[in-house]
Image (cartoon, rainbow, N blue to C red; front, side, top):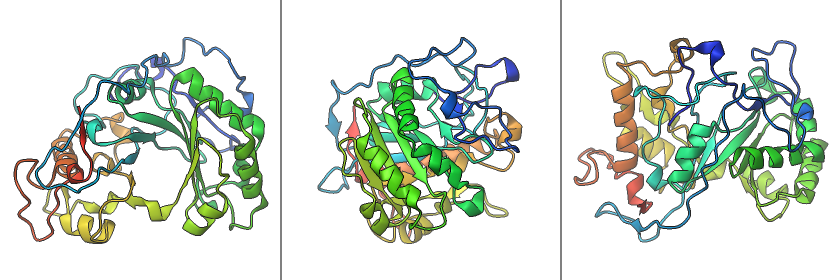
Length: 339
């Protein structure tokens, strides 16, 4: 179940979102993380926190198509479940919403979003936590620090590197019942920025209390160089991520579709998918998405759903082989189905 803004608008509950440093030109009225108190009780004005435990037992893992790799691959999805907004409904029942119907093929889900002006610390909405946990999928919030050229501010990195703020992130994950955080850190001029070392040392010393951190730095070399080598913390970088957005095309006179040439040759480089798959949500998004109250255009929606179906199950589904020049068997070729 996606958490998207409904017709009630300002009467909907608040999302769990913070700024690290609230800019003067902020477009949302979120608090700053430094004002959060560990163990605090949220008011009834917020979304009701999830209490659904992460299901780890009772599943079987089976191959779902005849054509498959010899080893199973665990995938982490980096997915924009909604725009960054102040309020959303507790539950959405509309069919035509941003959604994910293939949880059985992924292991982890990153609730991705944010910007310097909209909010930089995004906890997953309870409805998404519930759905992920019921399907045996760990779910992560996002701390989004964009590049300086895209509105980023090095002061946000300074705030993130403070031990007390890292511990607040851990506490929020416990309070709201999700597995940890994806730290998207790009707000610096280059990798000589001393605050990166400060952040590395602070992460190494922090008490995760059973939670996890995924720290993203674009460079593979620097990702290894800054690895704090701590239990519960792992690094990722561009070399471990497939950004799938360019595989989904809209052309004049054609409907939204998954371009198998772009996917196989340009995104995957004629190799198996990497462990991190980003922006598979792209078919749902358009320039007018926010103006539609975060519900997908009804004409667009079935084509977006078909794009995701083909991405997971292959060009012609599980039972039929692909017929195109660039055969795509789907994520189902690489990951066993969890039942």
